[in-house]
Length: 203
Image 1 (tube, one colour):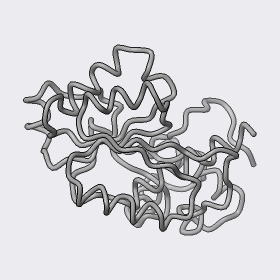
Image 2 (image 1 turned 60 degrees about the vertical axis):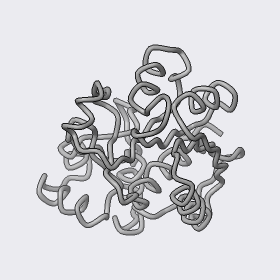
Image 3 (image 1 turned 90 degrees about the vertical axis):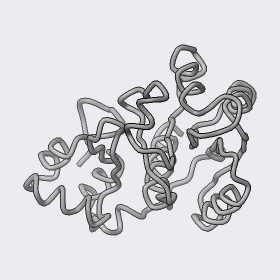
Image 4 (image 1 turned 180 degrees about the horizontal axis):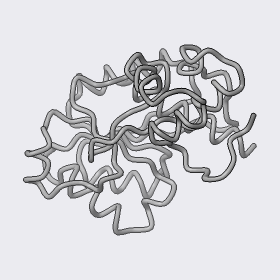
């Protein structure tokens, strides 16, 4: 069975439950147990990977669907990592290398460098901190949101700041997923897997 209708990459918990023919509570449990790829937006709403739901519909148990990465695109997924902590950058690279996915990691140390890299390298995904020297992540995201460079670019925030501190910096667009440190590598892998599946669908 193939999903039809709205082709957004992500579904609400209620939408996923209706498509899978399960209760809302069961869908929530599958999300909490990591059996469906999901994360929370800056506004606190769960978003479930449409690709993960499709794999369950295709007959995979949800725990396998949440970790499937066998479909690969022709070109690598470009991830722009905007982070000023060199130790954390090494951790990102080490973990991402273990995912066995076609990924190219590009780094930038602050918001200005991040904007330059977006224009130069056209990444598929940006993973960014917020507290950085010079231009911080909030300023960078706001500039991207007001420009055409944002087209086709997914942005994920990984920060040590809480919601109040983020609001004090000016806030973020509500659709941006925000994770608090330590780095949630499981959720990040789910986001990358979703990009891989979507890319492969257009081959």
